[in-house]
Amino acid sequence: MRNRAASGPKEPEMKAWFARDYGGPEVLRLEEVGKPVPQPGEILVKVHATTVNSGDRRIRACDFPPGMKTLGRLALGWNRPRQPILGTELAGKVETVGQGVTRFSPGEAVYAFPGGRMGTHAEYVLLKETGPVAHLPEGVDMLTGAALCFGGTTALTYLRRGDVREGQSMLVLGGAGAVGSAMVQLGKLAGVHVTATTSAGNLDLVRTHGADTVIDYHSTDVSRHNARFDVIADTVEAMDFARAQKLLKPGGRYLAIAGTLKEMLGSLRKGPEGKRMIAGPADERLEDIVELGRLAALGQYRPHIDKVYAFTNMPAAHAHADTGRKRGSVVVQVAE
Image 1 (cartoon, rainbow, N blue to C red):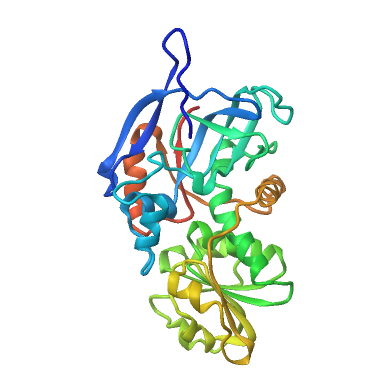
Image 2: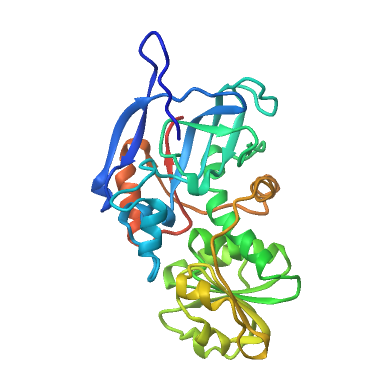
């Protein structure tokens, strides 16, 4: 996110949360910085809500998957986060627009998914008019709009890459998280028979998202399940390809959504009976963002909101994400 100095009087300021070092939630600091000014083709959005997701906490804590720490530091900052303002998704209202902008007008409600560019843990965010931003559909509130994209775009990416089709069967490992609950909902919407794993306290929640069968992974070893699946969507690193092969039908796909470098390299070759592993970063496509908003407006997809924190309480939102027990999304309300 760019903060440009303006000539003349002191520029307006905004507040943003900075992670200037790697570490626990205590490294976060609320600071005042210059309010961005939109240039031609840009819009300035006043953030009403954002989220703290697994990506945010991984970057803040420098907690990258096995084999990815060096690559993660090279990409995101060796000694500290290169982009200190975290946050990948938001909902808000257009404050001002730059010259030539025709798609958006001041006052319009929008939702956006800057994704890997981050920067949404702030009162204002600059976005390109042609970027990952769309009008918030009528009937979708700001808190829901802010939570649409992180889990939703990941689920759409892997359903697409895995060629998941109507009539197939899918096992979702970790059905209560932001990505897992999106996989359950969007898989069911695609006509898939969904089995999902979760802890005992989340069984009913996952059922409400549409899972046909829900398994308590504490009491049942899913690797010994009698059923065979066309697809296994692993959102929590609960399995590896070798174990997954025993549960896959011939030609089945193991979606290593939370995969490490090992899974990315392993995805280059097939297993026996045409079984294969699919891994890698999720897509950040405007088409997916718009589709998630459309489905939310129809009531066919709704991210589960676990807890809502005030903007001034951002470290507590990170601490909750750190527990690994959040259900769906942790939302931070920035403005009324």
